[in-house]
Structure formats: structure tokens, C-alpha cells
Image (cartoon, rainbow, N blue to C red):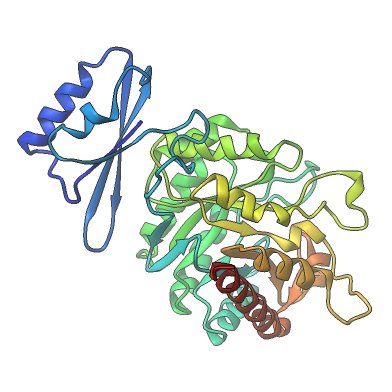
Length: 370
């Protein structure tokens, strides 16, 4: 059960204290509080976890300060869509809106290598009116001998150059709790020139301790990638781990499934699940065509497979794309063969605009009565 209090409820007010006293006296109930701090108002939600079947929505709705009560199903209690659901499916971070109704592009380096390449990438993003990027500092690899990323040593360069070129958010994978602290420190030392979106990679989708840690902090939103060898339900429950710990600013990313049936692509493209996730949850949905396809292969029509699957995901309703670019892919330390060239960025963005317009036209078409 989710209790939504009236906007800007004062936690020191008598009505708030009276409501909390009542809830704390309920048997076998755990209460978790979550706040959404917006530009104009603060929204407080109370999650009742435990034996809520005996509690009626009507009795809770009569408590002081309560605006409405949502009875939730067992699965995806916080992030899921429930009967008579009216809660928003959007959040704002560092001036950028994320929702199931808009679209954002995160193009950048899969793995940070040199300051020069960071500079070239971010300069190109600014020239194309982009304010978000991906920059990998920590890279989990299958082989212990492969490049693992520069780690915290490259963070000052990334953040300083992001500020220089007006990049508002850097998506950055983490694999350990210490990486959050290192990001905090580097942002502080550089004067907070940008924001960071923590990324949980496909290998860590069921690293439950890392999910709990990323969920307990509410400073940064989280981009969670689907596990490449588990069911969609298991991956969505991983997202629920984040939300249950307090961080509801979660974006779900489809990145392809690991199976021999995917050949010749790196992974089996799963972008048909975009509308499924939007139906089951309130999370914005991201697609990662680079790691799904894994190459610059081109079809006879002259369009690369990466471009084709990007369009497929967007026409299905994706709200974000995460794509690998590199100034010199032949010199990239990670996943060079799949990286797009910086000179291809304008065409990539134009193709995205075409696909997004097609999606919006489809939505308008099906909104019309038969």
C-alpha cells in the first residue's frame, strides 16, 4: 500500500505526526518514506510493507494530510502500474526531464581513454545541441587481463570537460560501493560542473547488495540494464530493489539477450519489450543498440544494423538511447568495433528524429476513435 500525502506536507506538523503514530501502531507493518523534491513542491509518499490486506484504503484515506491511497499488487510494488494508478512516470534531474513520454540521447565513450578523446566527444555533443553523454570509468570485463577502465583517475577530466561543454548528465557504470564515493569526491573537487547517472551493468543486475547501496543513495538517478541471461521479470525485480531502498528515479535499459540465436549480432535484440515495460511499470525505457548489435555491419540499403535497431526501439516507444561513439574506434580500449564515428553523430540524431516523429504519429493515430 502506498500513501500519498498532500504536497509540501511539513514533517514537523501535528497532522504528519498523528498519521505516523497511527501507522506505527499497525501490527506487522513496516513503513518506508520517500520524498520527491520538485521545482515547485515536495511530494511525500509512505510505503506500507507487510500484512496490509486487513487495512482498508478508506480508513487510511481519513488520516490527516493524506491525499490518496494506492493499493498495490505483489509485483513491482513501487515502480509498477497498479489499479487506478495516477502517480507520475517522470522525474527531473539536473534540469533534464525523464519520462515515458519524452526522449533523451546519451552518446559517448564506452570507456574513457584519453582527455583528448573526451574533449572531442563532448565538443561534438555541444555542437549538436546534446546535453547528456555516457563515459565509462569503471569497466567490468570477462577477462581479468582486459582493460578495466581508468577508474577515479579519469573522473576530474570527465567532469571538468562536461562543465566546459554544457553537458548536464554523465551516465557512468559502477561496480562497487566505493565508486559512488569516488564520484562524490571528484564532483565536489571539480565544483559540481555536471550531474551523474549511475549505471548498473548487465553483469550486476542481480548483485543485490550493490542494488541496495545504489538504492539507498538518492543523490543520483540509476540506469539499470537488463540482465543478459535472466528473465524480464527477474530484471524488473532488480529495479524494484532500487526503489524499495528509497531511490525511485530509475530508468530501465534493454541491451540485448545473450544467446546463440543472436548471431551474427552480439546479442539478441530485445527492443520489442519496450512497450511491455511501459505497460508493467512507470519507468522510462532506454535502449542500448551498440551492445545489442556489437558491430558496424551494414545492410544493402546502406543503413547500419545499429541504426536500424535504434529506430525499431524508438518506434516502439523508447524514451532514451545509450550509444557508443569514439573519435578513433581503432584506438578504443573497449568495444571499438561497435563504436560509431563522431562525424556520424549528426546523421544518427537526424535518423532518431525521424523515428521519434513516426512514433508520435502512431500514438496520435491510435488515439483516434474507430
